[in-house]
Amino acid sequence: MQSSINYIGVDISKSFFDVAIKNGQTYAYYKFDNNPEGFEALLKVVPAEGVVVMEASGPYYLRLANYLTKQAIGVSVVNPLVIRRFCQMRLARVKTDKKDSMMIAEYGHIEKPALWQPPQEHVIALQQMETLLHNVRKEYTTVSNQLESFRSSGMLNQGLEQLITKELEHKQELIDKLTHQMEELAQKHYASMLADLESIPGLGRKTAIMLIVLSGGFSRFSNYRKLSSYIGLCPRIFESGTSLKGKARICKMGMSRIRAMLYLCSWSAKRYNKACHQLYGRLLAKGKGKKVALIAVANKLLKQAFAIATKQTMYNENYLIKSCF
Image 1 (cartoon, rainbow, N blue to C red):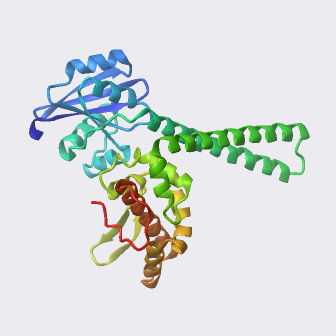
Image 2 (image 1 turned 135 degrees about the vertical axis):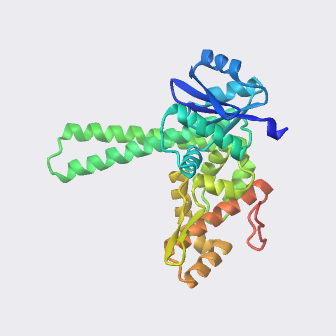
């Protein structure tokens, strides 16, 4: 039964992980190495009907999550920012690995998060390629800006300029290669979905691929609101009593890269996407700022993408896409 589930908190890092297991009103704590020996030691203390809850801490959680799943142990993987907000709500002031594992367990008992399913190999490959691509692009921008700065001084050594230019050429080749490989992999596994997403006016191929990567082919989220929250496009309104009126802001509990991509897409969508164009006009007519309206358009694009991907259909401006709740 649901009430008999014991949610076990795991705070994991590169070398080790802390474990908190609730026993009545108290917690038992353990610390294990983040390796196969530590995984086996954890199995010995996991109680019956136990579900292990951990944060999606970079790549460090993946080996343990996969191992536990193969051992028929339930696993829930939670966005670290969700845990952070939970701790703030609980007024947790102490920040230690031991305390973190206890708060993760508390989150499990209160929120009862959904069970995690191991991602397919091509999903992991796409995620890793996207991360590397992002980092290489950042490096390219940094080196390019540095070169421009050196040139502006009027005293750039010719040999150094050649070295930097070659480095930029190498990084651009890597960017092009990664972009091509991601497109090939996405086309191989998500050809139909990719075509459907690209039919949305304003949504380009790179953004469509990024959405597929983040959502695991739109399989990780049961409705678009959860995906919007994960990405960080859902609005938060700050109000207190009648004297203080705060502005609506996006919560930013997600990934800045995809938010930026969707925001850029909103500029085109407000012109060529019927629903987005109408939304943008309504918000401006109500006195909303252009940036607020564009963020709303970005969220509308995400809503359309979720509906189209999950319904496996092409975009049709005359068809009102109902919310997928």
